[in-house]
Image 1 (cartoon, rainbow, N blue to C red):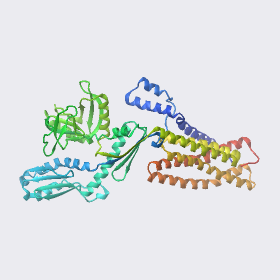
Image 2: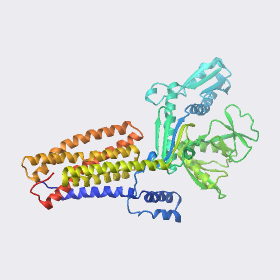
Image 3: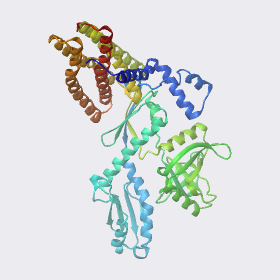
Image 4: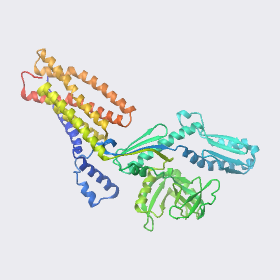
Length: 553
């Protein structure tokens, strides 16, 4: 019997209404975007009259999700960066030196005095005064080796320890270098993502390319230079022991130390230990604040590991200066007045409010583990993006109009039902894209255009099946029912195989390919829903009111 239960009718109508309501903000894109930006700004900085006016651009009780526009539609910045993974080796050797030094000091009775020697960035050389006991020294240093925690490095240690005359030579193993390179790029990728998100940009594309490169595309950013300012700062924060303060830029720092300038004291330099006491990697939080004199500053807090080391150091060095170093510049060198437990403190300096806020953002996002070299940078203007949007609109409208005309001429009244379902289908696609916060690109528009053409396939199968059933002298009601029942398997087979293709494209593709697969996959889901449920509901409701004796399909 041709009948749909009331609860099913209600669910179908509610689903369509919800999808169209979610899609509606895209019809007022600029107003809703202004409203959304004002909401974020008020949450971050508080309300102002200008922000309140922007907030009133769109009613707060209505949905405000938008389909984000990709770089090719909105304009923005494109960067291709190379991570200088070799920088990490030198930092690793500097961090290893205190452990090696303390280990060898425990063997001083047999190996004599120890002294670090100048060496390549990825090598640590230590001279001992009694090389006849070199074997014991090598065993002591080899005990510091750690197993590599990667599948490719199973069974191997992270350092190689050898002897060269009266020197102990420590290098990173080949397996550890591979693992370190991978960790460095992964860490840089995540930190770039966090920095760009902190800056409030919309839907960036940040992907790894090859072994040591990162692709960064951010819609809505004014230029590539602006994007580089957001992500280009290394923000290597360290807390280091001060050896000496000087005004002579040619001062010899000595082995294991380095000479760095003071940020706010021109002509002043500090000799500090290369191996920091605590690094920015131990930071849990950093927030802009004001010091006791009302000057802008930054509050910081360490994790338990950093808090313990920071507390131990301050307890043993009361009265000594302590350098807070950002990117090899001393931004502050306060004297330790007392033991600082709990792992929290404040960074002071000649900051403006804006500078303290920017510094807090960089510290919260974390330190880039290595320098980035920008191999390619492009700025795509919004005018080009607007041209792409207009071209996409024309393509979609032409395809839409052609399908509507074809369906009406081919199937009459039933074609009108299919056309209404097609309009609802496109609305549902945009509703789903808005709900999940997807980014629409030119290939994504191509996916929608393709969906418009494919969306009526299921209706064509059903209508042709109804025609076949009418030829067997069955009544209109029975013909419609059998048409839907017998066409269902063909509809599902055709769409499931296409959906699997869309899933594969999404899984192994990137950038534009993913944009195409998302709109294609969502379009398949909505077109099957509208064909099986929405069109059928309209036909049933029409049939119940008209009760025709014959059908013209």
